[in-house]
Image 1 (tube, rainbow, N blue to C red):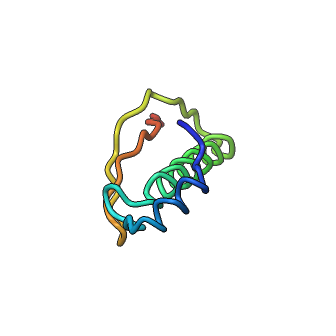
Image 2 (image 1 turned 45 degrees about the vertical axis):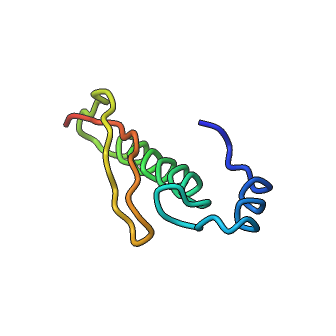
Image 3 (image 1 turned 45 degrees about the horizontal axis):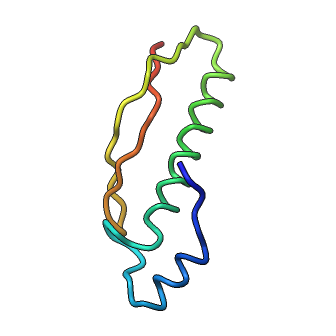
Length: 79
C-alpha cells in the first residue's frame, strides 16, 4: 500500500473533490489508519493472552463509517 500523498490531497481539495465517500480525498488515509489500528489491536491481543492463539490467514472485511464504507484486509486467528 502506498503512503498517503498530502500534496495530491490538497490539489484534489482545491479542485472540488469530496473529502469522504467512495472516491473521497481522505478515504485512503482512513483505510490506512484503520488497518494499522486493527493490526496493532490484534498483535497486542495475541501477545498478551495466555491461551494458544494462532493466525489463520486474512479475509476482507467491510467496515461502515459515518463517512462511508471501506473494505479492509483483516487477519483471522483461532483460539
